[in-house]
Picture (cartoon, rainbow, N blue to C red):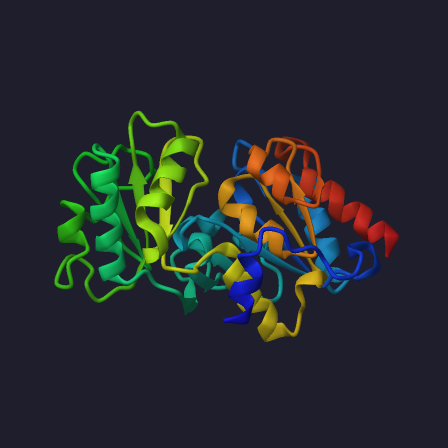
Length: 294
């Protein structure tokens, strides 16, 4: 697909200087980016998002979070009410509020690919433990640590959770989570990408050695590209914000992109600009300046 070709190019530069193109869409990550460390949205940021929407610029939240964790921003989705969740695995309409969201688009991880990824990574990194994220369900292995503030629906080995007749068999798998207790997070990401290859897309957003494994070609960038294409919005008309490796493709694809002051080095290298940290309202700072220029 043409959009996917564009998002995987790590060297693409906007064909026209970004400052000469009026932005039509803001795409922002949440944790470590739009949200402060206490998971709040500051009044300044709320005002900046509202001002952007009033100026006719759409705002899309693009996050690794599952849909059920989107209550933190459900009051700020404005007219369209859409968010990209699960690192691009789902487009969700949040209008119904917490627990009543509707999946508009699902880009699932095939169970065959998920099982291959689990097997390859077990061999490459012994001691890795897994959890399975579905549209509504969450399942994990017994040794998977309590990293998430929720009780899993089922406890079983990943091979059983991902079996065609396993728990939640009627629901699509959005991603699997792989955790290792001792490997350096960046080293674990590199190792996993080499081991899994093109069977799945591997990234991370946590400071710990926790990987997020999605379907081949599924990323924040590729799903954002699909949503923009449906609206007739080009990548040059997008401003993106992020802080962790799962944001790199999106920042590379967007016409203008900003790494937060607290961003991972790979994110700083990928972005066309840099703003202040999330706790200093870095997203709002850029939006305010952009609207002043308009």
